Structures are given as structure tokens and as C-alpha cells.
Image (cartoon, rainbow, N blue to C red; front, side, top):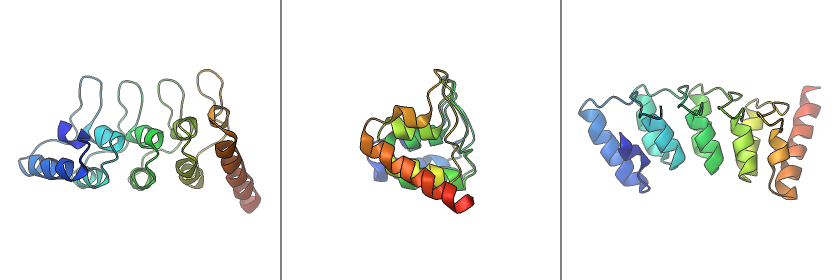
Length: 160
């Protein structure tokens, strides 16, 4: 199912569809514990990810680094993929081997729009990674930090 990691999304989807029609197992893992859904999330192959999920690929499987496909989608800033994985029951506050949540990855890579989606889905802002850093501590610039803080303030105002 390595076809799910091809950069050309249409080729990836075509090959994945062919493999699935030949009974390829989308739940198999590599020696690093990654599934085809991890690869699709990393390469932003949304249609491939949808096809894999339709064929029982789980958005809840962690690789050996403790990462879910959601961590990878957040790191590359793919909002539609993040939404798909959350709709597929990926736990928004799960941590990887470094103690990072998807929110940590999104903010660290400067993907404020992805961070907003995660926050709206219930991402916790007070979770610290293994070094003691909050996701907001990893913001690469003031704009990302401001955008996230603004959303947190609005979210808190609405729930209070």
C-alpha cells in the first residue's frame, strides 16, 4: 500500500483503488508501524485516505513513534485531511512518543489554520510535551501565536 504515499494524488488514488480491488489489506503496517493511512496523511492524498477509510483503515492506529495519521496531517497543515481523520474518530488529544499532540505539530510548523480546526475539535491547550512545552510555546512567529491565542480566547468566552 505504499502507493498511498505517491506525491501525485490521482496516481495514488488509482493505484490504491486497484490494490484494494485485489484485496490488499489497508490495515497492514510497515516495520515502523506506519499504515497506508499514515502515508496518505503525510502526502496530503485526501481521496486516497477516504478510499482507505472506506475499506476499514483506522485513523486510531499509532506507528512506532506513537504518531497517528492525524499527527502527520497536522504537521503538513492539511485541513481537509485533519477534518477527515477527526470525523473518522482519531483522538484529537493523543500524544506521540515525544508527548506532542497534533496541535503541537500544527503550531510548530506554523499551520495556524490547522491549529484552529484542532482547537474547534477540542484540542487541549494545556498539554505539555516531554520537554514541558505547550503547543503555543512552539509557534514559529507572532502571527501564529496571536491567531491561536485569539481563537482560544473566543472559545473560552463562548464556553464560560
